[in-house]
Each structure stands twice: as structure tokens, then as C-alpha cells.
Length: 409
Image (cartoon, rainbow, N blue to C red; front, side, top):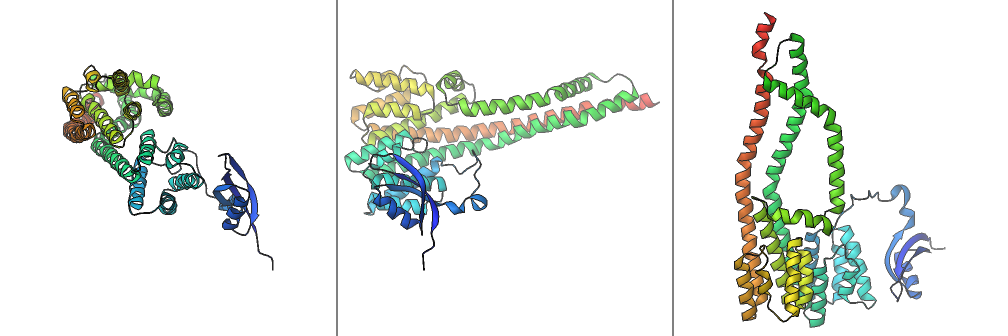
């Protein structure tokens, strides 16, 4: 009795690294892998073509599962644990590809494993996915491979990313309440102007008489909003779409990021976040053995601030001339004197990585303290603004009611 075969689609890579796609008939996926191996191809993915159509998984562009920094941190921690326990890198990647919950990351790890299996280095396999793995991770892994301490580097990467995720989480949780209250205030105001004010305006117009000035202003705002509500919504949607596509462009960042640091209330918070990210990434790369000049180029970009990037370039120029790290830092106002002095001490004592970690820990605490202070300040202000706005509109609407009895009489 003949064995039933199915149609499989495959993506494979040859010895030169070129990808090949096609279909093949076989009893199962293992048979497909065996046939591809006889052709000198390493399978990257094999899927059942008969599962396509009505049974295929529906994926909407932009709404698929994303790979976040937290996923990368967990992956690094698990890899470090398995390698420290004596497992080979290839075996560790195989286990990781099987147990990773994030399907997209599972696919990427499987491809990295196949690269390692065909003789590529781990860092080269990671570099094939620049949209998934940050440059700081790729370069630290490369340094760990060369130095023979990959497990230590992976632990450092995990700690670095975990601290970054923790910092972002604190900021998001602290700013969620003010943002929600602000959005509610806008929606409530717009709803009153669009639906409630016109009803009162028609009623007052049928009775005759002159409306009080606050009510006239409210009716005027209602009329303006009726005309411009749709164009404003379209403009906002268009702006957010444009912003999502262009916010990482250097020309755009150079226009708004320096202004953000100079903001009266939030500027200090933005500055502390940038310093914390810069010093923690720099410390991790120095400790992992990444060359200083290469590390400066990467951490400047990873900081997310063009102001820090410019400072990193100046530091790199100073290092190329044989000068210190601290001297050019003092010429950039974004770095407080304490940071400059601590880096100078770290250079003199040969403990630059430890000093950078201490600076990062200090500014992590500063960010947490600043966000708590801002939250405690913003919450009552937002409640007062929301209450004053809605209350003022209600008073303006009810002011003419006191004249209704005179108009009816």
C-alpha cells in the first residue's frame, strides 16, 4: 500500500547563504528535510501547503505578534542559563526555538539556529535580523564569542534589557492616569459641544431674548466644532500615521528632541532617561570587551536622543586623539557635572564599567522619583481642569434658564 503524500512548501538556504523557495511532495516534514539535505540545502521553514485556504491562519498586516524588548531579554536569560549549564549553543537554540511562546521570535530563533548549524557564528546569525536584535546585542555577542565568555555576555544583555523594560514600565504606569483623564476631558467636552449645546441653543432661540456672554461663547464654539470636527479628526489620524513612519528619522528627531530636553517640567525627566540608557548600555559594552569607539557609536544611537548621539561623536573624536572620555562630556549641557566627574574617576581607577553602572542605577532611581512627583502633581491639576471645564460649561448652559421665566411671562 502506497504511503499517502502531501504537498509541502519550503524555504531553505544553500551553502553560499542563498535562499530557495518551492514545493515538494512527501509523507511528512521530516521526509522533506531529508530530501532537502540530499540537495545540499538547509531547511529554514517547512509548511503544509494543504493547510492553506480556509484552514490557513489569517494574518492582518501590522496586527501580528510583535517581538518586544522583553522577549529579547527573556531569550537572552534562557540562553545564558542553558549555556552555563553545559549545553552547546546549537542545542540551546533548538530548545529555545521549541519553547518560545512568541511565534514570530520562535521563527527567528529557528532561522538563527539554522545559520549556526551551517557554520555561521551566533552574532552573524543575529545580524541577519536587524529589525529584531538591537546592534548593542549583536556586538556584545560578537565580543563574547571572541573572548570565550558568551554566557556572561548573555547575562549582561538580559540584565540590561530587563532594566530598560522595567524603566519603561514605570514611566508608562505613572503617565497612564494623566493621559486617560486628559482624553476623557477632551471627549466629554467635544460630546457636550456637539450634542448638548445645540439642543439648549435651539430652545433658547425659540424663546427669544439675548443670551449671556458665556452661553454665546459656548454656542459659537459648538458651531465651530460642527464645521471642523471631521477635518480635525482626519488631520489627527494623518498626523499620527505620518509620525509613526517618520519619528525615527534623524531630520525629524533633530527638530523635536532638543526642545523636549529644554521643556520646563518634562525636560528633566527626558534628560534623566537618556543619561540612564546611555550609561547602562555603555557600561554593558565596555564590560563585554567591545572596543570603546565601536561602543560609543552604538550607545549613542541606542540612547534614542540626538543630543546624546552628538555627545558620543565628540567623545569618539577625543578618544581617537588619545584624550579622555570626560573632557568632551563637560562641553555638553545634557550631562550634569556629577556624571562627568564619576566617568573621570572611572577612567582613572580602571573601573569605568562599574562607574557607568552606578550612574545608570542612580538615574533609574531619579527617573522613578521624578515620575512619582510628576504624577502626584499632575493628578490634582487634571482633576481640577476637568472639573472646571465641565462645570463651567454646565453653568454657561444653565445661566439663560434664569431668564426663561421672564421671557415666558
